Length: 304
Image (cartoon, rainbow, N blue to C red; front, side):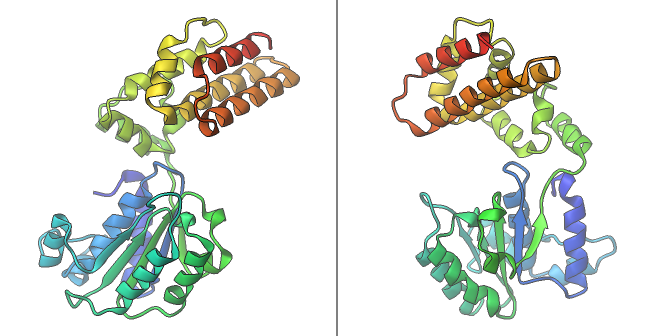
């Protein structure tokens, strides 16, 4: 089922497919947690479905897989020979990965239908990899489709961007995200609106039983200047270092509110600088004394 905020995109692509204007290279760009990869996978499954023509011919149809044909059953089993997924293994997508895609695209389809390759986080391609991809983009084969996702389109070479049909994936109607959270029975936390534009991030936290920890981080952020015991805060971040970004986001939002309530701009800049330094140090310096860093940041906030 398509995520509700992606219905409009789904309709546009369906109409494009019906009119035979569907581009062989689709680039989905948007923030983390908006559903780019889920949508790319859904689209790939639809393009591989044996009954795709019948699916889109139906009245009020959308570009989706039937779920019953041989191709769909292979997809469910994770063994479809004409579907290829490339994801980051380490820090980058190398040229060998892209050459593998090109080779995959040029071989005959095992199911005598379409072939689809997905590249997740394609901005992580090396320069050599991006150059290797150009040949596939410039010389598309019949019934071959390439689907790319990125959260940082500005990092992609113009040569790649210009050869793809780019779709911005985002939540344009925040009420849809709010309703979706309600359908998942996610508590209406005070901080939840900050993630209406990244709904799948919250769903991930729900699945990992992390929502209460996120709420604890928010409470620390709102009471940070008055707090002196940061044991629980440090324990949460030490266990999940990636949550340092969420904590600093919450603190930054608190600072914005204080600025609107009369905090001097100089004080705001001083604290924001300290907050940025805190985030950079905790994401780049191994073995940093986190309790000391937290106490130092709290001291800066109290003095401003």
